[in-house]
Length: 238
Image (cartoon, rainbow, N blue to C red; front, top):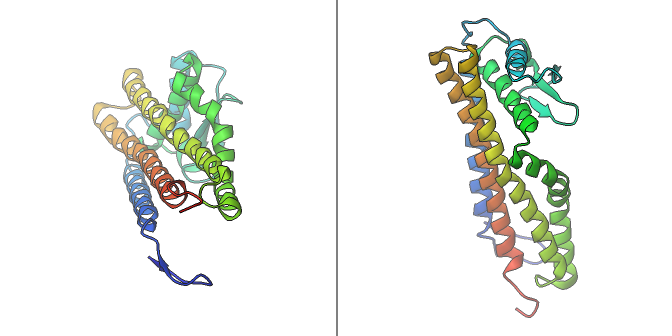
């Protein structure tokens, strides 16, 4: 990739890493959207809505204190451990599709993780504040350090460490999400909310969703690799 400006033209081969990461993320996003749209048209035989399925799953585990609430947006579903609420998006809360029930069950899986003190979930929760700060501050710190002291500046290394924390967050997220989906599929069958064929459909929906987290990790790792190539491998006297 060639770029021009006051310093002339130069070739930056590391941009290919950003492009690869973006392509991976777009493919994963397109797949989860197409899979969800496909199975959102398949009505569950039980006729239960996502909200009803979530409440039944939570009650089956004795989690009567966790509320199920609607939240605006598309696929904005999440479990909030602070308020002990399973928040379901408009397309999930009132829908009777196998896709909606699968997503609702997945969020219940997070509530179950929280209830039993699932270690990766606790670790992710502990990393969240630092990861948020690190991902936002990393680039300004790296650029400031580079312009002040060159690639060998301690600020550059601090910025790279901050961005590495964001990579760590993405890495810890994987077992949390895969485990939540595993719990969801198992309980949907045990409680009898979905039949065997319907469980197969739900597995595809949750499997496609899981790939978005894998893609996010890959894109973040590639971005970190680019930053290391650009700034971490040089010294002031180069």
